[in-house]
Length: 250
Image 1 (cartoon, rainbow, N blue to C red):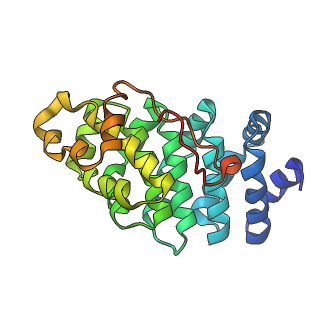
Image 2 (image 1 turned 60 degrees about the horizontal axis):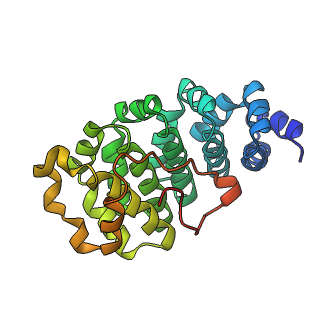
Image 3 (image 1 turned 60 degrees about the vertical axis):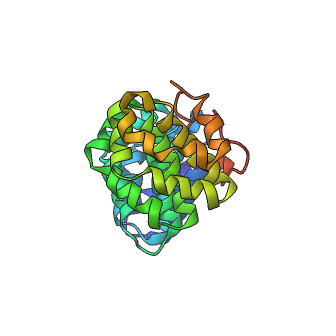
């Protein structure tokens, strides 16, 4: 399927099979920067957001994945936000429709959206922290991995966000994921914790009790070297699939 056909099929509202196939194709097309521009110019971002909200389970999965890849582009992050994408993706993360992939890719899209302070503020304004922390405790292994990525990027946005994450109880489930998660999950949890604890001097009374260095030496090394570090590079999910190499910045 070429890009033009995929964009046409995406507009076939009501045809779940066609829209799912179109979104699946856009997952891979959206890896390329030139294709991102074509997809956006065709007005496909609102259609993908609508598909996340109203499509079949399979279509939702692929639409979340496509938005994850599109959200690598700073301009498209704003387009997604203007199309109510943050709200829709957050609902997709929170609502359990039986698809771990849908929840995980929605979380991955939010992680990429959180790369910018403006879009991170929108995510925070939607009350995302409690929902994400709950999923970090109770989600599947795949969902926990992507939520850890989102929490790590959100933690970079401001001291207030880091305090809110700590207050919402984000640190204990991240520690547990660091101890027992998959390789990719441990890497993302480690970096999220490192960002949080590297700023412990801001409110030592809140964060010092967690003393994560005593619980995980690798985590301690990270937290000592990431003060002021940038967010992790956005995830190209369609290209990297589920990466098992060390994420950027670690």
